[in-house]
Each structure stands twice: as structure tokens, then as C-alpha cells.
Image (cartoon, rainbow, N blue to C red; front, side, top):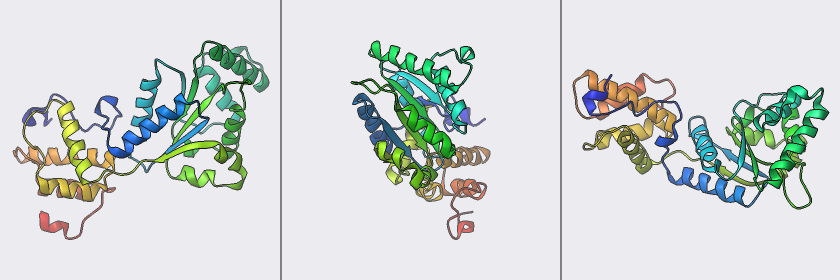
Amino acid sequence: MYETHFGLQEAPFALTPNTRYFLRAPSHHDALELLLVALRQREGFIKITGEVGTGKTLLCRLLLNELEQEAYTAYIPNPHLTPDTLYEAVAEELGVDVTRCANTHQVLKALNERLIALAMEQRPVVLVIDEAQAMPEATIEALRLLTNLETESVRLLQVVLFGQPELDTLLRRESLRQLRQRITFAHRLAPLDRASVSHYLRHRLAQAGYNGGDLFAPAALRLMTRCSGGIPRLINILAHKSLLAAWGRGERQVGRRHVAMAARDTESARQPGLMARWL
């Protein structure tokens, strides 16, 4: 579409999570470092929360890539499961043949044996759950019971929860206080500030093959920050539409007018006052 016009090799602002485009902005860098340090210290529960579009799934995938050589990982992307289904899903992720198990007791027994075998291989096991705010309360309690599996000297399963702020609300329930007390480390992903938004745009453009001057004018960057609230997913949407607007007019740089047009066309974007003035 506009790639050739701007000297790009590929679309730089696709919404599909791609670890190659991960930017180590301060909050996201801190989250990744916390995860790696805590997991290497064999902590039990770790929680990462953030608003919709702040990059939790991308961070989750990056974590799985980082752990590939040092741990055995299980990944549950959609945890809206019953307790029994959760046990089966974790067992399958760890290579357990659940078709041989007649009931939940047998699934848990086989899962425990598998965890012990991995512990004997000196391989920590990390369960990563994305969109954890969608877990039913009964399933969260089942998850807590699952982490009771341990030997005298080592914890057999570590858990990382990624979720929206609703996860914090869910875990504040009195009935879930036992799990809440087990969360030893937690981090809240923050939106990008103006400097980070500028860095984010330049980083993604460079990854897509751009090697020219500033493609987004300073005024465009300021409005982009304001309209997106520093949320990476919204930045991607607005940047893509802004490039389309500039390309459609045959212009080589994205200006404030193009960002305003993109924001007006995006329901989830913040609409700055007097936007019509920019048009």
C-alpha cells in the first residue's frame, strides 16, 4: 500500500504481536527484567497487569522466547476454563497424554509425575496465563491448588499471570486471599510518554526497513501522544492511518493534520478539543 512510497520493506504498524518490534521502554523493560529475575529465583506467582493495548501479549511472547533454553513452559492464552479443563490444558502443554486418564484425579496424578520428572532434569516449569482476568473464580482456586505440587526442596510449578486491571479487582475478593498472598512480585505496565512514543515510532519504522529522516513531524508526535494516551495498540492504529492519509495526499512526511484525520476516524482514540482546527 504505502510501503514503497515511504521506503518501507513491510508494514510497520501491524497489530499482530511480533517480538522483533518489541521496544524496551522503561515500564516494559522493567517488567521483563522483573519476570526473568523472579522466575530464576523460583518465585511462585508473578502478576503483570496493564490496560488493553499496552503490550501484555507481546511481552508474554517475549518471555516465552527468553525462557526457551532454560525452562519448560506451558502457555494458556484463553483461561476461561473450568477447573478440570484447566488441569487437562496444563497437562497437555507439558506433554501428558490425558486421553489415558479416566478422571480428574488421574490427570492430576499424571501431571504431578510429569512435574517431578522435569524437576529431576533440573528444568523449572513455568505456566504462563494470558488474559487472566477472564478466569472464573473456581478456576483461579484450582490454579492455586495446582501450585501446591512441590517436593521438600523445590517448587514444581511457577505461574505468571498477565491480565487487564480487572484482574486486580478479581484478586481482591476475600475468597481469593490465599492466592493473592502468594503473589510475590507484581508490575503494572504504564503507557508510553511523549519521548517513548517518538522512540516507539522510530523503532518500528527502522525494523520495517525505513532509513530516512523523521517521518513524523514534531507536531504530529505531540498529537499522536495525546490521542493515543501512550497506548501502543492505539499508536499502531493511528500511525497506520496517518501514513495512509499522507500517502493519499502524496506527501512524504506525516503532519499534525494527518494524525488528526486518523484520530477522528478511530473511536477508541482520544479526541482533542478543537480538532476541526487541524483539518
